[in-house]
Length: 76
Image (cartoon, rainbow, N blue to C red; front, top):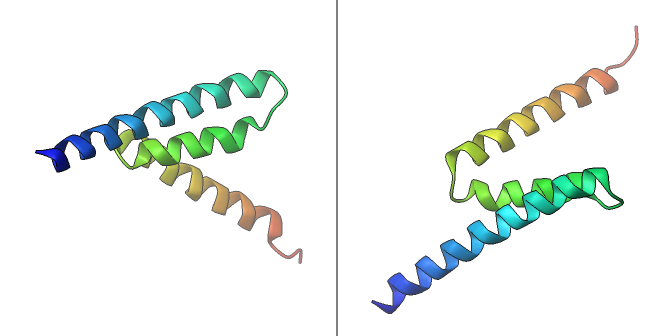
């Protein structure tokens, strides 16, 4: 019984923290602060619980790798 309660509290804590970081990151885009890293931390926490957040993180990783390859490609 206690293990189930601890798991539920942990899950609720992760979800609340993830959404809080996500909202703060969005606010920081328009105000001084590190908005993008905070958004990524929030999505990282939410990806542990939600499929949609995991898909967003995978797309961000894929697009970042594509942009990195495009900019770091040697010129001919």
